[in-house]
Image (cartoon, rainbow over all chains, first blue to last red; front, side):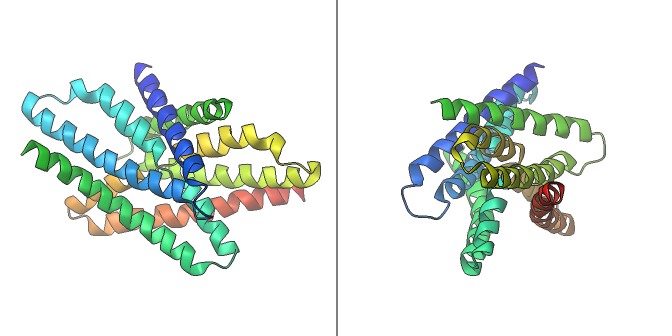
Length: 130
Length: 130
């Protein structure tokens, strides 16, 4: 039950941040920069958070004390800040308007960028804690 | 401000549903069935919701009255029920364990399934309202 509250709280913050970013970036043309940046930054933060937990567990010798933080930050916040359904909806809209190159580029940039930013997050924590 | 509350409420529900599904399905082996099913069902629901709005707007002649529902159900719930960061994290884990085929299959099944379920959602509403 407490676990659900942590996930729900993080999820609310993640969704609101994504919406805020979408509103902020909607002035810059028709491309879905809000969803794009949310997905990239969420993957970066996921890498940072998980690597940070992994390293401090290694020091402290226990993973259990991090469970509430993992639920709040990783499952809740990062899970909700990033999204697949909005990406699918936006790419479908581009395909419907025959913007094949934009659709394919947007999908590929999100996927490639997501993995890249996730690894950058991991590397950042490794460098800072080295 | 009210908009943020709708998005946050939907986001909390979406994240908690995703977490609940992950806990429920974690007993069925090591594959991330929770994230997988959340992403597919979230895309299905996104298709249903957006098509439903589109058709009732067409009938009622206004999109504004649906804005709170769009924020709660599409941006909040579907946006947070589906996730990219967990997918990236899980695929990265598979790659790290040299499970290349599983990683590629999981990524492809999520993407292909996401688009497929989104269109199935649209078609379902079209069939029901025809």
